[in-house]
Length: 239
Length: 177
Image (cartoon, rainbow over all chains, first blue to last red):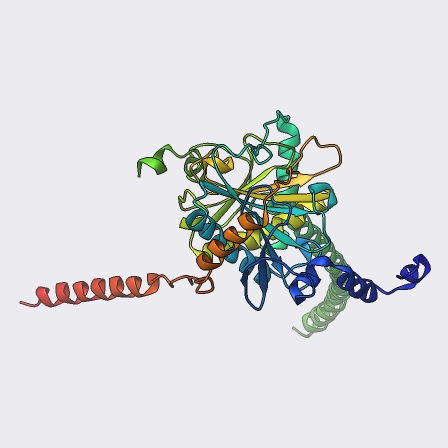
């Protein structure tokens, strides 16, 4: 067996490989360990559980080694569920079960006992004495539920690539308005600056012009007056 | 129909009863359980009314299982769950309380008071072998999964349009003296 030091130095891929080598269910799938096979195809294997909750308790194993559900691609998960449905139907038909439980335990805390992902199909009868799948009911404050609802809605829609109308719009709209208004403000400021810069020279120019004009005006009459007076003076005596 | 009308979850789907909806598309709805076994107990159900999994078409199972996986991932990240249980109760004997098929997604934490451990039953070799043989026979036909039939919605619409156009043309023609 490998020592702890060797384990610590292993890459994740090597660890996974080691896990596969030590995985009892991988051995069952490869046929190194004997089992009572119910159904097999290229993706999944269904066997009878040797420690059944009820007679006919079936483990549906995925042939690829995955530890928990989040690691498994959508296609393989959905294939497993379709096979589970068919096996559930087989249980009702062949074992005359009055119901079935389809059960997945993800993680040690959830009751997972082997590091190989599997789906349990448990045939049920009315008087089989199994009570673990009767879910208890608890009172949970509405605030807590509302918080959970908001958090989960966002995350699930993010994972499924869906744009939610509710929270995202509320969050985003003000931002958009703000950015727009900021932009507008910037633009207005820029325009104002430009206008000011344009206006100033205009005013200066106009002032200059006015000054020039006024000078001209002032000058002209002087000249004119002179000229006229000159003319008049010049003309009058002539008459 | 009466089953549908009396179904609490069909009424939730039809928005006649309020529920904390966390995901919805045209085929499926996920809500926080009205009778939760823990904080974050989620029910995922098809919008169409089915009682048990055997009635649910394979393509809908595919759709639901993908969403189940995503919800499970979301539960790990958002609620800091250390594990999840996914449970389908098929039939009253299996603990089903509502007439509407659904998948339970249950986030798990340490000391949450939930326990899904069963007491193993002892069966002798003969019993095991009989079960094995019976089930093997019954699982022979597995593999031919239903695919979703494409709805002929577009074609219908086109036909309607043509009808309207024809009617319009006919009306126009009728106006000619």
